[in-house]
Amino acid sequence: MCGIIGCVGRGDETLDTLVHGLSKLEYRGYDSAGVAMASGGVDLCKTAGKIEDLRDALSSVSLSGSVGIGHTRWSTHGPPTNANAHPHQDCTGDVAVVHNGIIENYQSLRDELVSAGHTFTSDTDTEVVPHLIEDELADGAAPEAAVRSAISRLEGSYAIATVIAGTEAVFAARHDSPLVLGLTEGATFLASDVPAFRDFTDQVIYLDDGEFARLDADGWAVSTLDGSPVEKEVNVVEWDPEETGKSGYDHYMLKEIHEQPRALRQCLRGRVDEMAGTVDIEDLGDLSPTGVQFVACGTSYHAALYGAQLFREAGIPAQAFLASEYATAVPPIGDALVVGVTQSGETADTLSALREARKRGARTMAVTNVVGSTAARECDHAFYIRAGPEIGVAASKTFSTQLAALNLLMLGMTNEEGAREVIAALRELPGNVQRILDESNAEAVAETYRDADSYFFIGRGYQFPVALEGALKMKEITYKHAEGFASGELKHGPLALVTENTPVFAVVTGDGEQARKTVGNVKEVEARDAPVVAITDGQSDVGRYADHVLELPETHPRAAAVLANTHLQLLSYHTAALLGRNIDKPRNLAKSVTVE
Ligand code: AGP
Image (cartoon, rainbow, N blue to C red; front, top):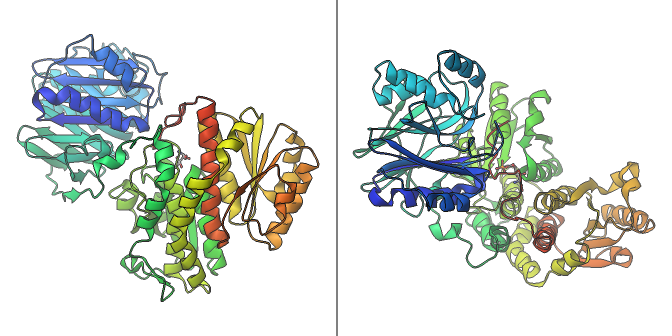
């Protein structure tokens, strides 16, 4: 939540660099935005609204300075108003601060500062920081010492960047919120995420919790908050800046849906040996756990449900937990592995569950898309889904690659019978997804049901998480009511909601017992006049009871889940487009949820 950026060394380009970086971070929040630049004084411009609104606001002011910071906000404390937009300033206007996270002790700090005579102009927790710095400066501290001292008083989560009048430097610190430095000859950047400066450099340094950075004309220095120097490794980012553009698509989400064949190929590359029927994840070492617990949120939780089923089928006890509920879950037993499934690697609920698992003595693993993310660095093991950058707030290609990666993980850790068939199906997956992208009639179905009151999604086994995901995607980007159910559950209550204006999307693959039972559930809704859309490979007779069919090729049920989901992604996307929704930036949401 929230994106922050800072840069030093860009001369006259400083303001443009900041605004460009914010536009790349807008997926992290888009309630308000602002920038501050420092030279002799601090110049600032901020506004409620999106980066476009900030550009408009900047057209009527003049900002100067060679160092700067910027922010795009997802509100936690206070509504998205001009006053609550970052950067925030102290009483003198000499200090400007941007922050991502939540300062838990802000109320007591604010009370103390107000009693000491400070005037606050926003409802935010962040505003305590510039006032604390102001006090330190007034007491004679040098700028860097003043910032360190102020930050040492904060409790909670933060990635903070600040500029101070008369100081040609940006100071930054992190605790439980991401911060990464970008390095070039002559210029240094910091940001919540690499896309903010990826157009300028692929050389990055990931800050760890408790670290402090100084960016100035001499370059950069990282230390602990109390000043001990820290040696940092410079990493090279492997993806291309072009991957974060829209490449001619109307929306990032549509582009990312269409990138799935490539993303899946990247995920599989070098990891499967089809001839031998084996998967190579040797770089993870010998894992052999006695059980697996998955923790995740949202779409990643749906992938975790699928993953738990994979491991159970291979004979390893496995459960999936909503990360935010993990604290009350049964502790891991024996030599268990706790796997956090998290695209961003920065989701606060998931990080907190993984930390809890470590406290309980479990080994941990991150299944993530982001190299260098907090989850990847904090866990004992990291397994990358290799989807490439995903900008649309609604997860699409990362879900498909999570499912593929979880298959690889399971096959690499077990001797499951039938591995050869699964591997063959995974190999065919990119081509089969491409076929669906080329041939799906989901857009026509979206047109037919665009005015529905509510959308229901049902499935069994591997298709149950797909039903949940289909509903989540529909809710997120269309703002319409949608629910996903295990097919058998419909008759235990939700059937009361079924009418001729509630289309039911049934994912039915194969012709086994699960398919037959779901066909029975389809008949139940059809008898109550609900329109039925079958997402099916045609092996069962579900098509007889359906008003529309979204076709799947025959394949392994695990691969069919990815294919069915592709149709459902397109269905939600086209419904949202017909309704004129803000598809890449749905209201009230953010890509990376870094608060609990
Ligand atoms: C999915 O479309 C959502 N944006 C959301 O549910 C997301 O999957 C969830 O916040 C978890 O994110 P993560 O994978 O980055 O941990």
